[in-house]
Length: 585
Image (cartoon, rainbow, N blue to C red; front, side):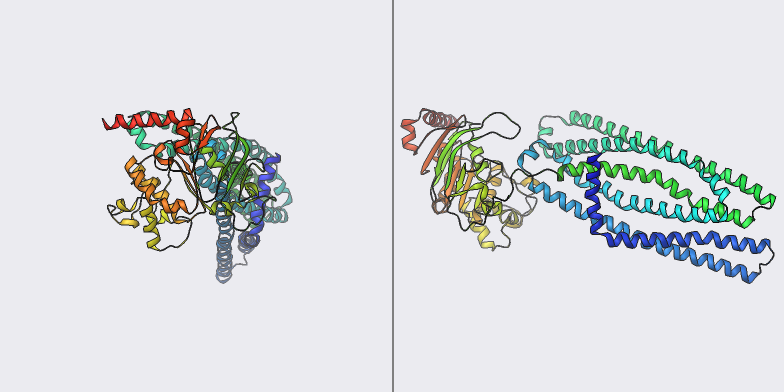
């Protein structure tokens, strides 16, 4: 209950932001219903004038014009009502999507490790749409029902207190029905929204891995799995549809019974002379005007409960505090010397209990090339992840330019680093836009120069539109090596103080690697470079090489020194030389 109140409190903050729309909307609701409720009274007066034989053709024409006029005015303010409250709901949808998107960009790797992409997409689309329906149509109909009911009941009491009491007697049954159904609708809607996320995650994963699915002939198997998920989704929605299918006719039946009761007792009063026919007709019209608002309550309850369930799912993400963020410890820093130091750092990934790095102490000097080599899973890439602060570490364990890494603003830290990860990610834009990512407008000559240095320029001439070629989702139109070189060009063009290459040349052959490294000589010479690689050919020219095994630095030195002093390093070199000889056979 406290959680639901907090969720609604969040939404109220948005409603306050756009309160002028809701205020004008409330005014439009009052005016709409005022004019709508005036029409039955005019009908009553017209009927009574006919009963008393005071009516003439002219008077009836005037009555018709009056009734038409109030109907036109009611329609105008009904338009104004939708123009204000529905607009406000769209603005709230816009803000909520932006807030959620910004939060998602702040969240750490650990969140994405445990949360399927499809689930995130479902919250950004389906859940936010449900919230919009709650603050738009649902709020509008609830307010309209309250105002219409209040005005109608006041006028009904003026016309006949006794008949109004009779009409209200069955309403507790309606209230009980609404209360019982609402709780079940909330639970069912939460299940539906959660299952929709599961389906979205399944589809997204299969589309992203469609080449693997086809390669392993798994189309029928995956289609069968999706069929099961889809059937469950249909079954949940059918349960909701059945509930609504029973609920709406039940409400209509209860309203119909009320109308029959009122007609019976009101008709007797007209026959006995205790009420005029005009009063009975007006009373019935007021009672009829409550039918749609009461019927709409069932639909509104569905919207409200669905929106509340979706809001809870959205709020669960918004409430997550990013592990890595600027805090009160963050301070303004001038240009930092690109010198990195580790001080007895041990690290384990969130949610695990195994130390990936153990008592790492090392210096990465400014303007030098420092390399890390070791077996797969030894912890090489983790060192890079911590340098760019993808994960939180204790204070004082890593310093850059003498400043604790936790005190350096994230924007400042990452702007001075050019990072090329193992898995190169390209956006579905042009090659030029991918290379120039994050640095604004650049000259085409700068893009070409970066491509030349990364060894990509020779391939670009074969692309249909050169640097304007759209590379497709995740760079699907490029080979693995071309994607790595495009990511390398992206890092080079930033002219970073620290260049980090994490197994950047794994998808290219040795000859291409040597050519790229030769082109990078002057780039690497002028800045601090960190190389991570399983290939000795990539790192052998580094100023200092650290050999890592099981999360520890077991030896350090130059290539020649390590060949004679480090058994693990010599073993890696020997194995790779043997592999190269076998490939040449």
